[in-house]
Image 1 (tube, rainbow, N blue to C red):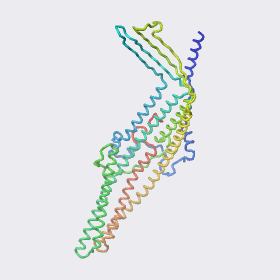
Image 2 (cartoon, rainbow, N blue to C red; image 1 turned 90 degrees about the vertical axis):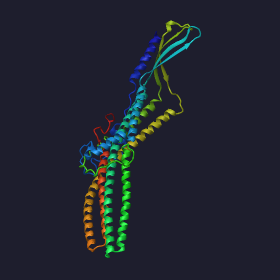
Image 3 (cartoon, rainbow, N blue to C red; image 1 turned 120 degrees about the vertical axis):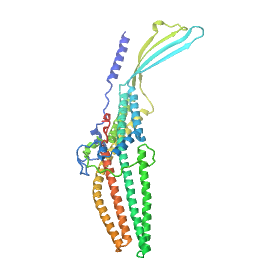
Image 4 (cartoon, rainbow, N blue to C red; image 1 turned 30 degrees about the vertical axis):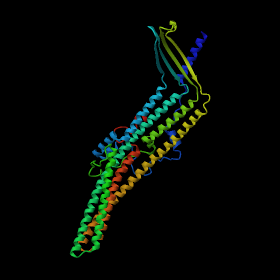
Length: 470
């Protein structure tokens, strides 16, 4: 009787230890992680590029371009883009790994049956066995594993959120580039038409005796040059359309219809504060969750060096027409416990701790790199937007001046006070100015998209970061 009470006491004590267990150490907080990872990075109170409103970052940036066609294309890409589907599948995989890790904390139950026949009319041996086991997570090995899987799942969710944002931004910029290519094609065609008109004028002047062969040769060379530019621009337009179609999951047939003009640049957007960026951008959040996952894996590896304690229970029933069984023990049941303590494994367990610790250092460094890149992308986008704004004003004036200069040169050519080379130079200058202005207009829109992406603002009604990852 004393042994029965002793065994019961041991079981109760083991169960209490399992239920209580050792408390898990919490991963570093966001503040602690930033101090450790960004030790040499002094975050300023405001963006150094300056000039932008410091209010909270605006969401739904896609609607600010007021382009229904662009909005529809982004929606199509979210449905059919293959790379985004890969990211979505990874979210499902991470959720499955979390279920596997969580299942290790629950009892495992199994059933086995046996049946055998015998010669003659009698039956053989028949039986059923039901077994259950539960590892007592005294040291937290299983809970650390579950916590690591949970943090990894949150990281993958944040990765998916950033993939959606990146895809929307890439579609928008590709849409602007495709429109630019079409507009650039119109500029080259217009310039080629002017060059052909100038060539005809030079030929007419030569025919009536007031021109010369040099003027005709120069005009012909100019026409040939613009025809080559036209062919290159046509190829660029086709490539831009195909790149956009691939993002949409379509066949790259270069058949997509683009808008006849670029969207106007929306007003300046609020950019928030640098100190808020690391908690808002999904890729930074994903890096932070991976640090937490690596921290828990270190705890899991350390706990694996300690003994494992398990409880087992089983019940069985056996019958036979051949063997004589004792009915008082049939069915039979039993409970017990297992202890498995690692004594020597060649340093494998210690090496696992070292590996996990190195992985944690790697994840902290990766977080620092992601955070610094985020700061750099915002500052770069802000600086580029301000510079492009100034260039746009200057290029508008340059285009107007070159248009006026070309008109005057044509008048002088017709009255005979100037030669064709002066007109050709003015044509080339105007072509270059119009091309540069168009590129700056496109770049302004692209940099605005880059700024929204760098700030971590959402483009639709879904949260920029999944709720579970916050």
